[in-house]
Image (tube, rainbow, N blue to C red; front, side):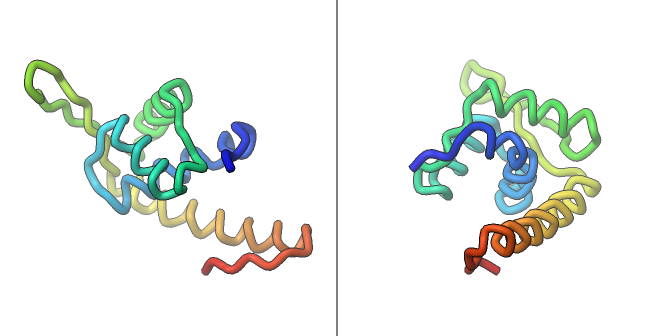
Length: 113
């Protein structure tokens, strides 16, 4: 089951921050593949959604980048700043609380954490 793009819009920054917090320095395509694997294929991030999110997080000071030459290509890696690490933790906590609230509103049990 693939999730709607509307649901993903509100969670994409949180997803990206959490992936970078857990896996460290990562390039864009690698982020899409990690999310796909972690979600058992339910979340397929597009470049059109991912890169504007990465650029916004970088502009807000949550990410920094490093360009590395791989073969004949330049690959841009993203990593969290100190502020980004704190933001990732805060957003994940906020999202878990939101899931609990939605569970109560929808009258369903949320089993994770």
